[in-house]
Image (cartoon, rainbow, N blue to C red):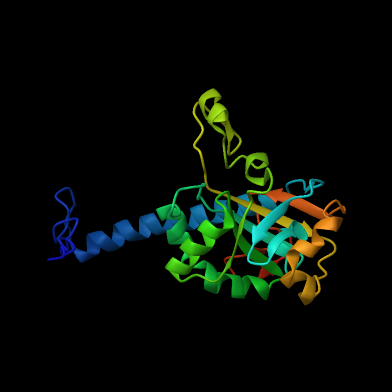
Length: 246
């Protein structure tokens, strides 16, 4: 007989023991005070977002390649004809068998998210260090269809500080601009890139990606990195704001 899943609630029903019970009037007074603080937090978040958009851009000269369903492709193909590329560093190392549960939670939204981003000239892909066959097997198991590539052919994950070799883990290093005494094998991250030449590759070449390898040393003209920030940001007011504007 198969074992039945445990459906017992993680927490008992009703308010927690430490909860303060009051009248509707008390709740309204306390809620309005908290609302003022929430509004202030929103204003501070907008100010920080504007400062983030004004951060310097960094030119990317490294010729990165990735393994995907069409073989090995240059980074330019990940833009898929858009001028902006959002890369989610999905925690999935070689031999893991399955991806990080928390990354999987976020990835459940990627299929629909990329449609909205495409209308705003941005592509969204996930990148992991696991070999592509392992990635593809897990993606099919989860029912996902978004672009997901392996960075195994090169040092992309290491260069952006989201993967660490055994010797790096022991020695410690930098993650998210802060020193870490012991690095994780894989860490989450978000990288945003822009290009001044978003022309899509011909479909025939995209299907037969390995034919592009003779051109792999071609310079990625006009590819820029904006670490941990989205070049064009959807504001709380529903307006798509270019990176050049505060």
